[in-house]
Length: 159
Image 1 (cartoon, rainbow, N blue to C red):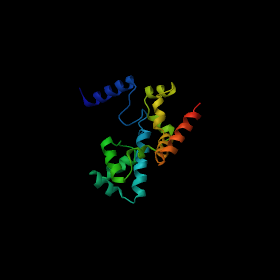
Image 2 (cartoon, rainbow, N blue to C red):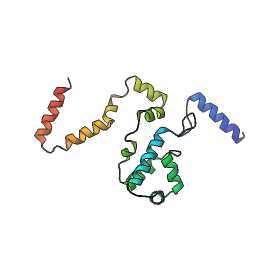
Image 3 (cartoon, rainbow, N blue to C red):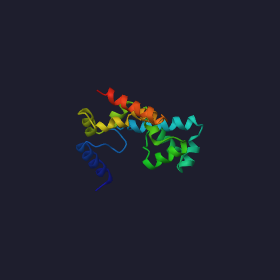
Image 4 (tube, one colour):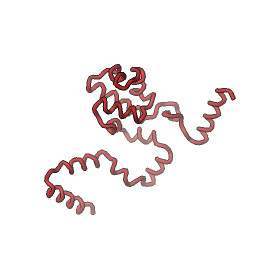
């Protein structure tokens, strides 16, 4: 079968299945999450005064690949994101911070969106930045008695 026919056939199958090209939205634009992660990569790189060439060398890739990551045209694999986080001195989660609801929703599959609209996963609250900051603040209280009193107060307030 000619290669063009294979691509056309695959496009039809993807359309019927509701799937997307890897890393792209149905309109062909990059996934908003990839764009966000890339912009955070660029932000951190520039904040620490690192050039694209230096980051590329540290990650053993070309600077053109770094450019594609930063624009969101190429998505970053989990292992490469981990390498970048170590090189740039931030946790992997840093790349996802401050993501807009629009970006997260545009990237979500229909099943995920339906789950969120139906009430979603109650454990999702545990992943919120506010929750993580509250837990960090709680555990930074060195006085165990004071920490226990705060815990009891929060329990009493939940109604």
